Each structure stands twice: as structure tokens, then as C-alpha cells.
Length: 446
View 1 (cartoon, rainbow, N blue to C red):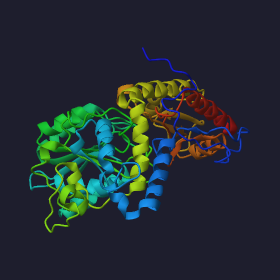
View 2 (cartoon, rainbow, N blue to C red; view 1 turned 60 degrees about the horizontal axis):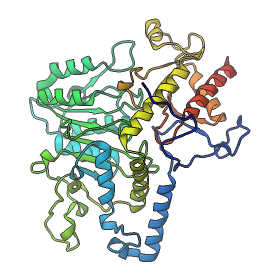
View 3 (tube, rainbow, N blue to C red; view 1 turned 90 degrees about the horizontal axis):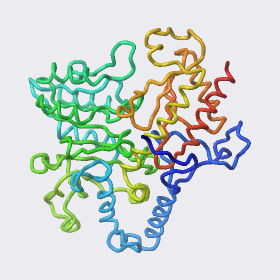
View 4 (cartoon, helix red, strand yellow; view 1 turned 180 degrees about the horizontal axis):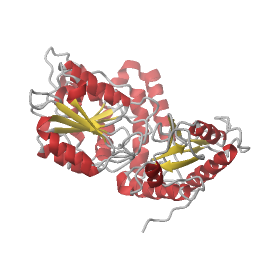
């Protein structure tokens, strides 16, 4: 039985919301009231803790200057700043501390990992991924394949949903793996698909990839901080992620990567940089690279301390909230509540009916369906709403109206709005307001 929660309560009160006045919500007279923010899957809200730590680092910079690398007023010398961050991050993704590193950006880290782990041969050269992966991933796959002199049309296998469906079936993914296994070098899916919100069966796919002799990596941009992960125990080879969504690290915040410890002796950093050199001799500036053992050896340049401070603050708040156990428990309640409210709308159309009707663009009455899996075990916090008629401009009208009501989701052209009740700071009341104002938005265009 799902736990009951106070409609007004949240896991943490440390987060800062814009107000209706801040975003110019024209249809909300309560201008000083916080907005209904359901966009943590795109950019998480800032925490007071992050603001405090960022200000402390700015002060440390102002009062210690370069000495702050070794002597810090708050005991966080910049050369060791990631020590606490890595411990907390390892707990979030289910890894050992030496298996994670906070560094760079998501796509940069993806390229580093693919350059180390994608080693095509004449027989085994293909990459298996989901169709319509996030564009940056698609670009990375294509450019890595081309760098090896291969044709993306033959070297990249994209698994598509069945005709008329919106998400992938587990058995279809496993069937392709079984059929194409001897030719697959690397399996690389999103943990949670950015567009549909589908949480792929990560452990099952990883196991099947290994059975077929392939390596397996994951893009966890929409998974980290959203769903429970056990990367080490699942025997995942590598993973990459950003931290500005469910980990609330700031716009474009520093990213992360994971490398299983079994690769420590064989997959040494190919593109070395001084920050990946062991700390005890790093500042002696030796001519020969001596990497830190594990994922942190892949670091290249010293990281932005301001970005790290913001991430550390959010991770500390997450730790105080109990980490991913309580987050997942509450996420199930919030997402389930939002779904139950949405399906009561007179404008809601079950996805099965949409699939059966194969609607033509521009035909039919205004409405919406939910293309995210209805089974809680197959999704995270996000619900993706597909607006009907397809290609009619209904989504754009609804999105604008929701913004006027102070409800902030995330639009994906041409017909989808993503709503994500984030466990750390969203409430049942946020879900109720989103459903209420969605109904009002439809009435305005009826």
C-alpha cells in the first residue's frame, strides 16, 4: 500500500521556487506565491544549501585566492573538493567511490567513454541503442562510428517501438540483442528515455549484452537522482550523466561518469590530463602521467569549484532526505497521483485508443494521452503528454496557457509536454494544480 503524504509537504524545504510574478503568470492574481514547477527533468530548482556553498567559495576565492587550493576557510581545499562529492555520487548511482568522477560535461564524458570502450572489429562493430535517443547521443554515436571509418547506417542499430506504439517492449530489445549479438560491440541506451519517460530494464539489458559478448554503457541524464541505480552490482561497464536535472546542480552544471572497477588495470585513460594524475605528486609536475586508480584517472582539467559547490549542496540535501530510497518511494506516490488526476479529465484519451485509431494529423477534437508507461516499474518521475489532434498546434496553445497559470512543464515539439513531479521538492498540491489548470487550459480553446 502506498504511503500517504501531506499534500503541502515535501521531502525537503530547502529548495527555492520562482514566484508567479517572477515568470509573469498573467492568470494568477497571487503573484507572490510560488509557481507550480514540474520541470525538474529539464532543470532542477536551486537549494538554499547550494546558494550558501557557492557564496562561501566566492568568499574563499576573494580571501584566499590561489592559496584556496590547499588552505580553505571551510576545510574544503580545492584540490580535494570532489572527495565528498564523489562519496555522495557513488551512493546515488550504486557504485564504489573510485568508480565515479565528477567532471566535464555529459557529451564530453560520453565521447571519452566511447573512445575507451567502443573498439570495433571486422566481425563485432555495431552499436545498439534506442531509436530517437537524445540528439547529442545520436551525434556522438555517429561521429564515433565515422572516426573508425564505418558507416552509421550499418554500424548503428536503433530499436524502434512497434507500429502505433510509443515505447519499447523489453522482449523486442532482447530479441534484437539475441539476433545481432555476434556483431554488436557496444550496447548504449538511456537509462530513462528523455522523450517518453520510459525507464528501460537496465539490469536485464546489461546482463543480456554480456551474454552476447558486448560491452554495455548507459546515459543516465534522466536516470540519476530519479530512479534507484546499482551500477556496480549490475556489472555495467560505464555510464555518464549530467547533474542539473534531478540532482539540481545549476544550469549546465558539472557532469559525472562511472567506470566499473574491473577495468582499472586494462582501460587506462587514453587522453590524459593533469587533474587525473595522482594528487600526492600532481603539483610536482612530473613529465610522466601517473593516473588515479579508477574513474577519477579520466579527469583532465581542474573542475569549476563554483559548479562543484552547487552540486555538493544539492547532494547534501539529498543525503539528509535519505537518498534514493525515500526519493523513489515518494516519487511513486507523486507520479501516481498526477496520473490518476490526469486520466479523470474529460479531455483524456487512453493511449490504447490512440494507437488503435492511428489519428491523422489535424483530425479530431482537442485532447491528450499519456505515452509514458503506466506501470510504475517502467518509469521514473516523468509523464509525457501527447496532445491531440497531432500537428494541430494544440500543444503550443496549452503550453502557453499553463505558463499563464504558473504551471511550468517542458515542451517537446511538435505535440508533447513533459510533466515531472520531482520527489525532493514537489508536493501533492503541485500535482493537483497542474491537473486543474490543464483542464482550464483546454476549456479556453474548446
